Image (cartoon, one colour):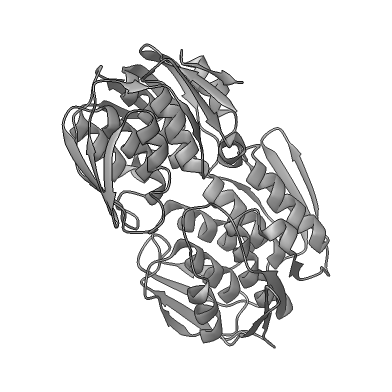
Length: 413
């Protein structure tokens, strides 16, 4: 449980770790070759530990020392991802692509993960079927087979990050050329492509809506440094926006956060970019704006709970529209318990800023909602106790300690 009390203006410097949403996919991609992988700037979070356990169950050896992760992958592994590991996090579905690409078979439990609505895996399976895989689903497991995948043109009905990642990892060892249209454009996609290219693949166009993959016969183990976590950086920027002050977020890349920066500036936060990171100067109270989530380069769905918290205390009325995950408003009732004036209908929420939130016992249903509740608690009278802290620990390396270093009154209860 995390305890938060009303905090004054924040000040100081905080660093961000490597992107959770990238490193998990890089770990899955290590299955594509035998040898020792060295991945740097890796956060010490639960999701990394669980993905490591999944790789070890398959036969790899994983060690995490400081921010350096080493993965030793043998020539032969067990291409199965069991329920007790997969149900912890949805990202584990991306082992399908590398397992089918290298070994021609995979048995993966239907994934679990954050509690914000159903996210179907049909697009993953359809894309891999376009490359020649066949699937059966029974007893809670997806079983896939392919003698050798073949390159093909794949048109995604939606620019899904996970589907794009699965396709890239499957296509690098496929015979021929694969072209993915309407591909996801997130920075994490480009990071994965850079990792795969370092391994010997031929990927062009990553970061655009059309990605081309020239299949190769074999890949090799490499070293790689993970890009900074833009969602973690956004969390610290939201914190200073909630209560005011001046902070520097070391490692934050403005070029990965253009739309977030634009919206925060519209709300009244002054932001300056430098080679070291981002410096934010925030007033005591922000202005309300309208926010709509979209695939990159739009406002990320992971930013949405942070904006909801900011709008709950801002001056005016803002409308939040969730266009990515339909069930992601489930945490709103927790903010309402804290005195927020939010009315949600369908995928829209009308947020009327209140003068002050009120501390209350609340529960985090997922990673980013948990972080948003912590941020909201910084501006709430009294004490806020946030249950479900294990969700926060899935995505943040010491969020509590880092906020405390900036002057926030936050600790584990």
